[in-house]
Length: 437
Image (cartoon, rainbow, N blue to C red; front, side, top):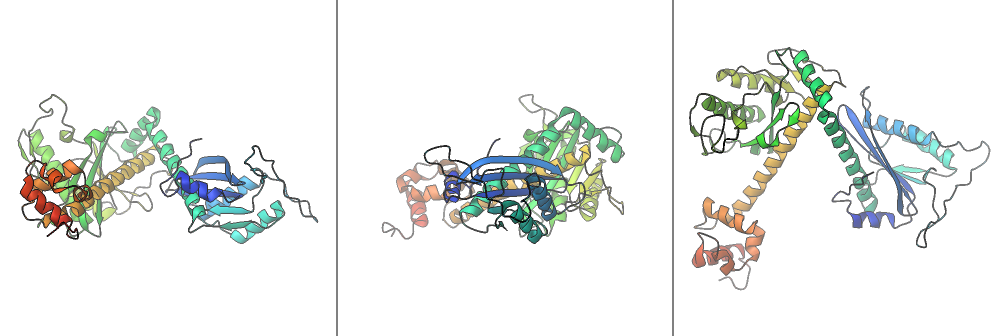
């Protein structure tokens, strides 16, 4: 089994956590609306003696605390009960190397159990496990320190397992075909939607809004067709809310589609020129010009109705649905009540995967825009350093930090800068330096 180490649970920190002769089972549970991934580290005598992981279905809407309680019952019920009227002697496993220590076997209940979420009826479970162990058992959620870092590592394994589970499920050819057929059936489409586009919006408290467009063809992500949109709004500073931001994204995307279908050259809202036609100068298909069979937006009825209005205003007749996060409800424009797909249906798994991928791509684009904005805000105040020179500096050095650490002569080497401006830039970025005037 592959063990993933998170940033907070690096190899060094993991070593710190388990060099204290710890005897513990460490449980992490990560879930979404349909599935839960569980991972366990068995730490004995300060070493990881074994790991286990699996994915379970959340068919009955059980909470994570209830799932954790069931997990304890599943894992520890296999162990023998303590004979009534006497305290069982805690078994010990021998050391297997010169630097090893005697420790509790992995098949025995340890004195400490760390969890990512406290199980329901914790007191009853702790009493039951203490009886099995023959001594007190402490169940708790570590909040800080090496053990919290180790729990984060176990949680990262659970996250990776859930992602892998969904990827494998969506990646299976038969499963993809079933998902597309189910979408056509549930949504009353004329045929299976071979190209699906999903849209999401990401921002920080309404600032630096970014829209994402991800594309699945034949049920498979086509990452070369992904696009992101910096939201401008009427005054260039964004829109009031996610609904109006989604309206802008859809209008920009499908205005481009109509221009290319009608053979019209032009430029988009970013000022980038484009040529019409299904292929570019190299003969490769322009995936941005393809018409989708289904459009999915992140959100409920208000969002999907607004998206429908945007498409209708441009004469775009393409099936459209919204997927609400909380209950995984599928909303159709104009309908009072949502569609509820079977919780284990291939179609719902595909919509989830599509929505999650759109959300991930939107967040990634937003973080990049936010980082660029933070970098450029420092350079904006330097006279003579406009957008093109900022871009040249960042392309050359990679970050404002690297520019600040460079010499005036190195900055002057950048195309379009020169010795005089190079000195000005260095002084502006290093105002506290004794070399600055």
